[in-house]
View: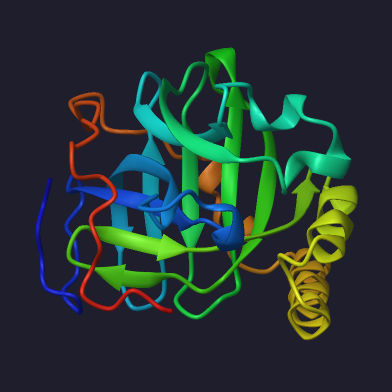
Length: 228
């Protein structure tokens, strides 16, 4: 795994980790890692304006599961965020995902394709602005998302999970209001067809020589400046 300084730029082809901190800190078992999602990715572009990374098909990732190994979304919504959890390794099957994040933005934009590189949609993942560290970037998911289709139409996603997260105390009222404001700001970008939607990323293709990044044993290591 590439190691660079916290403020250094990664080069195309570098392998880093794209991670999310656990929202359910109160339900984390003693000694459990603060990170519950980890995806090894390959850097496509890293500038002052944009970090673009590629998650290849077949990538071994870490995802949250219930303590008995059940998938999180198989749990009824009423107890989905209060049932004890752990993490599990799993393989990302299907097409890969291109992820785009602008420094300071409270969201990232993901591009999905179907087989044969048929472009499916953009996906706006509302989240904390990314924190860079030597091995990658960390964030915290904010439950609410937006799907954007090739015809430029869009819709909110996971509003039920967003409401439930507030109900069980994973997100206070002020944070929820900030997340909704961020979503509305993203909608303004979509309506104006601003970057990155207008930039032609749906026509991008990965370098066929890039290997699939491995998942390191210390995928949950704490970076130098982990937010509290």
